[in-house]
Image (cartoon, rainbow, N blue to C red; front, top):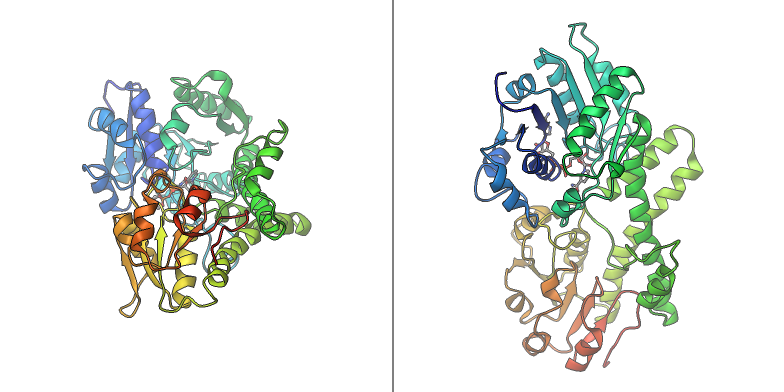
Length: 461
Ligand SMILES: NC(=O)c1ccc[n+]([C@@H]2O[C@H](COP(=O)([O-])OP(=O)(O)OC[C@H]3O[C@@H](n4cnc5c(N)ncnc54)[C@H](O)[C@@H]3O)[C@@H](O)[C@H]2O)c1
């Protein structure tokens, strides 16, 4: 293709990863042409509109700076493949819901379709970059597919897992802790790896770009998520013990986290982790371990997920016990539905489980969230008889409720006028703080019965 751009980059999959990561490359490297394609035409239309399909602080600005200049969104996958030398693949790799490995293994059907499409459309050599999170040794399967036709085209597969966190994705990509690039240790592999390193070196300091063999790179992504989730389950397990012993989990976390070997981050007790990745990636790790006969190792990582499931149920049981063992007919207001603050993403959000359990207990629900109400409506798949309302304004949402359950740590929920809210609620009024973000003493003095995570409850009863 004739053009003045130095490189032509394609990304297949315009989701939470593909969109922001490629926007960042286009923003930082005006000398490259970056195209993002997807099989979902509605998603592409949204990327080309003023209402981007995902909410991420700072994303609008970088999309606007690059879109139409060197950043393009399209549904023409074939053309995209033909015109690019480097192809990132960031399609979804959810947990399999059927057949062998159902509920555990990664579903690689979207991944494999992409590999076949690349093989069918490519007329010249390509570097294929795994950006999706994949089971270790997937690159081998990709190579097998790509080399199944002897058509003279050479494909080099690299692994470049994405470590961004939703809600801080732009900051994470602008200044990443590290960028990881894995390759085959062959001459062609190392040359391809260098090309990818050169792209990131436009803005990432060279010492933060880590190069490894391809299997270590693939596995590191699963391990990073497993370690992060493990810290959350560890502190949540301790929170349960704190509730029994009148210890305070925040103070324990502080004392423990000041040990430099442990570190203070990611030690916040909560209603449990969510998001599309942690659970799926750990289950995938567990599945791989079982595949290799490492049952003890598999059990160890499985327990991280088990504690997370326990934590969500424990939160519901705390509500039930506190509210005189019946929630039937009581109005409960959920503050937040997104799986974390600063995103509209609700995939695997603890809010889904909690809302469903509260509905089983026949509570009436009012759900508020600044960004996630559309997704919340889709997640709950409500039928006519369900007593659930979605209200944007938190004051209106809380009015007339028996209890508030804080599910997402949105900044605005720290700063609300809880005296006003208290006045509008049914008494005795309860707050269940699933994120420990509210000023518990102050809420108690206002009149609320307050149930934090991993701390003694403050009650007037
Ligand atoms: N979301 C995160 O925070 C995050 C972080 C790091 C890594 N990851 C990993 O990145 C990958 C993508 O995650 P996501 O959150 O962006 O998923 P997503 O579901 O938001 O996006 C995936 C996109 O791929 C498209 N797609 C599927 N099959 C396709 C095909 N054959 N051709 C073209 N497009 C196709 C889908 O339509 C969808 O828009 C996953 O493997 C995930 O584990 C996600």
